[in-house]
Image 1 (cartoon, rainbow, N blue to C red):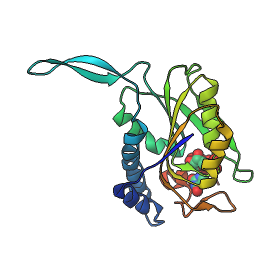
Image 2 (cartoon, protein in one colour):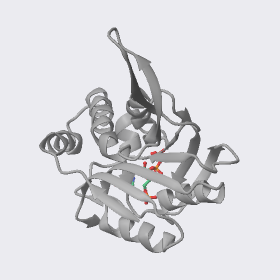
Image 3 (tube, helix red, strand yellow):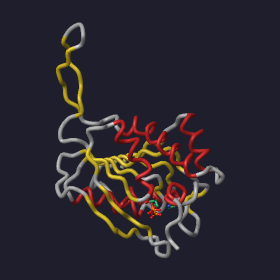
Image 4 (spheres, helix red, strand yellow):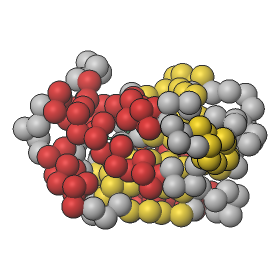
Length: 213
Ligand code: PRP
Ligand code: URA
């Protein structure tokens, strides 16, 4: 696993506003969208491209276009949905798969409630997006779904990560796959409830409101 931590003052500034408990949902959603755009610059550094011809008003020249098969972007529901528009804006030709994972807040295990991934991901670049990498259980489950469908090129884009979660992903993958994880910031630790500290709270709730009664 390769870890890339973004180190940019704009990213640090925007993450600070995200962390603030007074930041309302509309601002939170806007910031998540802006942050994914900044992170995507690094995450897509090795997106597959191919040469193409282009006619400028002056001449013809050789350009670059995203190669086939198109990359697959997979938001991990719910909170990953907040990052989807930013990613598809940058790679409009990408296709989108969906994974619905819900962390059981007692056991902290990821439970799958939706899976709309293509059966065959051979040769596809896969971008998994989820703002929070806490214990790492959800991200490992999502990576496993991609690997078992034949993906060999998986990049995960997260906003905040706990050191424990990063280690869990690293140990779970071993040398089975060279997965890249791009994060805005690595926080101090997990608390006893499995929340990232200092963190930003429950990303899904802050984006979309509380659904569990
Ligand atoms: C959050 C988050 C990740 C997961 C991280 O989702 O968006 O998917 O928790 O925790 P982990 O690393 O310990 O698995 P949650 O399960 O709360 O669902 P939600 O997005 O619907 O709120
Ligand atoms: N999921 C979240 O949304 N936040 C955390 O801190 C941990 C898991």
